[in-house]
Image (cartoon, rainbow, N blue to C red; front, side, top):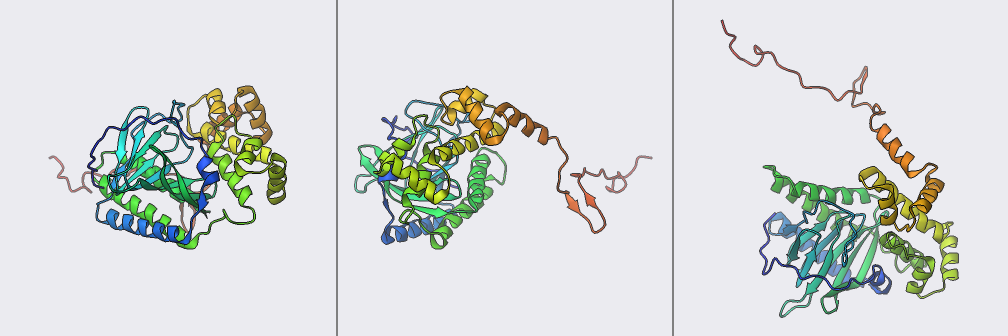
Length: 357
């Protein structure tokens, strides 16, 4: 991928962040012309990437899941495709400006703040890709107030293969930090694969925001986006959706057979389980990062959902990593081989080396 050229590398510190989820609740669904524009935008990005003309920006901040003033983070990657104007990103240890025809992948857990600016003759505009549980969203962002971006219109797509998208985004982040000779080739292939899958889902996927259970779907998305916020509640979600808490609770339970309060707890516990498995954070740090203000209460809720304490859950994960693989590494016609093999040393004679006399 080409090294981007910027009018300025210095990002402007962000102003107070808009509350997460406001754009989701207030945004209109994507009209047909906007969906057509989305197709055209991704087609152009694929064309540029294939010619190595699409810039790629990935922050190098190494420590995820930090609470920083005027910054936020997500438990899944976030992707920005800049169309017009600039987006100034600030991270704990770095900053950069995203320019038109550049793609930014922010790894999961990396805190960031963002402000935007227009070009002299064109307003700010970008395409943002977010990931939820079995769902991904694509939205066009605009400058809602001076230097503050927000959702203009949004579309949600069923993505049963969401792990493929997330794996591609994570691998992009990991590969960008390497210094291998094939790095640029690998990055190009990953970007093309990711953009191609996004382009395809626009044609084969469908939006759920306008369905009869639109409020339920929106409530789920808000929970998945805001679960680290300790103040998230049924009342707050209902206020954002313009209905009463009792009505939303009844509607949610009718459609999902699960109470919304239980759903909020379950999403938080699922996120905590991921953190227990993949990060060295302490139990208390994970409790606070997933929306619990009391680590002791978090431990009780975790045990209620998982049947064991967070400490025991992490210990079991550690023990399972040392167990023998259940699936064989190689299947022969007459036997199964569970070993990973070892390199065979060739003799000097086999290697064609003349033996000393």
